Amino acid sequence: MRWEYTPYIIPLLIATVISVVLALYAWRRRTTTSAATTFALLMLVIAEWSLGYALEVASPDLASKIFWGKVEYIGIVIVPLAWLAFALQFANEARWLTRRNLALLTIVPLTTLLLIWTNEAHGLMWRHTALNATGPFLALDVSYGAWFWIHSAFSYVLLLLGTVVLIRILINFPHLYQRQAGWLLAGAIAPWLGNGLYIFGLAPVPNLDLTPFAFTLSGLTFGWSLFHFRLLDIVPLARRAVVEGMSDGVIVLDTQNRIIDLNPAAQQIINHDVSKAIGKTITQELSTWSEFIWRYRQATEAQAEIVRGEGQAQRYFDMRLSPLYDRQKRLKGRLIVLRDITGRKRAEESLALARDQALKASHLKTELLAKVSHELRTPLSAILGFAEMLALDVYGPLSDNQKQALAEIIDSTCYLTSLVNGLLDQAQLDAGNFRLDLSLFAPTQLVDHTLAKMNMLARSKGLTLSTEIAADLPATLSGDPARVQQILINLVNNAIKFTQTGTVQVRLYQPDVTHWAMQVSDTGIGIPVEAQTYIFEPFWQVDGSVTREHNGAGLGLSIVKQLTTLMGGQITLESEVGRGSRFTVLLPLQLIQEKLA
Ligand code: ADP
Image 1 (cartoon, rainbow, N blue to C red):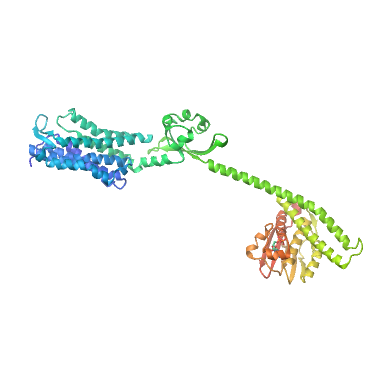
Image 2 (cartoon, helix red, strand yellow):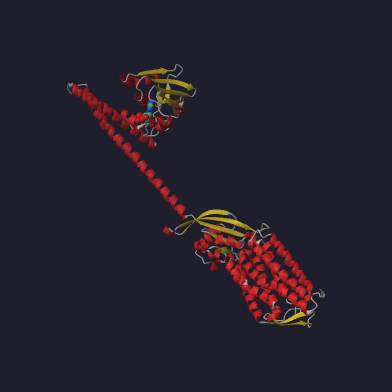
């Protein structure tokens, strides 16, 4: 085949090379986005078109020009289709590219190809073909047949649709991507410009079709925005979709505090329409938020809780302010994210209210308990006093039956008195107004005095109650003797209560230089490990059935523990079910010296 050299093939060959390079470049990045593959196809068919055109221009005779002219059509019919597909993918609208739609869209291009290659038989594409030597190079002159116009109209519609889709991206684009948008616009318009110049005979070189150049130019700009700005890597549109759908309000400010973007949630929060707010400064737009804006006008990073409105309409927001930097780490603006935390706040408020009410109720309960217990004590001691006088025959002699009944009355009254005393103690401890009455006391005396009473009880059950006081224990100790006694009574009482056979032993000793200890051991039923912590809680008992047998309110150990703590000591328990229990109360030696000092 002979070729005729003309300098006009050079730009066409350059366009071919550029398009092929872009196609390869995009192909290598096809995994980053589906639009890259379509872009590669678009560039490949543009290359094919440009190369076909270069060869047509370089052909010396009509037959070979016609041949290459037909070869070009492979590219010419695919370009509009690839253009539209690319635009749709770029705009995240690929859902339109169904197999059915694509099949329908290929009907006209395939028919065009069929008709151009069989043109000699019908002339539906080219009616006449001739050589035109009027321009600077030998060109192919054709007059068009009927199908050509259908093909042209179809191609323009596809191109137009693609361009509209691209321009729509620009309109919807976040304002931060303006530079990329500029490139996109140039690329979308170039083919129209190139084609228009050729059609209206305004091309700088007569008879030279600028359309393939224009498409190459589009390819370059698209490639630039795709790969330089990584437009598809970031998928800004997808990101925008996320921001638009967010329930948090998002406001973007530039460095002059102008609102550049705000999502629907933000529009609702600040009660402003996007069209009114964009481009205005935040101080202008949000005068009601002025205090907040003023406080954070300089801050690039901040977090605060903002309250808006009054009464029922009051809303709380968590506001986060963060800086926006470009790739060169220059400050470009600020991002405000507003989260409505009204629900959480309301929940917190009602929780606090409930807590206050519960505290108040508990306080009232304690008060009531204290009052009632106190009021009960007086008549109880009167009952006990008169009963004891009756027993002593002060009001005349009693029959045996009457004495037995009286013994029951005294027993129950004693139990009731101790119960009421326990409740009163617990109520006072709960209310925090339990005072210690500190003094010096002789521990031996205290123990003897206390145990004398309990000995009878132990003996009546066939138990031995023994006492052991260590020789090195100081003769005088400091503390609240009444409370120490109360502790001892409780522990020994329990020991006797929960022991059927064996001994109850009370031991007083000095375990270290700063403490003395009071230990009560028994050979009773013991306390299971799982119960060993909670028996010190008020109203807790190990087992309802055992305790019912022994009566009691479950207050004793709780009071013992609180009194011990109040005196700066601690209580420990060692126990094994079936073998017995050992309670040790450790109290400071120096209590009174410290308190009296
Ligand atoms: P209560 O007035 O019911 O005796 P306490 O607080 O004194 O209340 O005791 C709580 C529970 O701990 C008792 O009901 C009993 O189950 C258990 N307990 C206390 N001391 C002993 C002990 N020495 N041996 C076995 N169980 C005991």
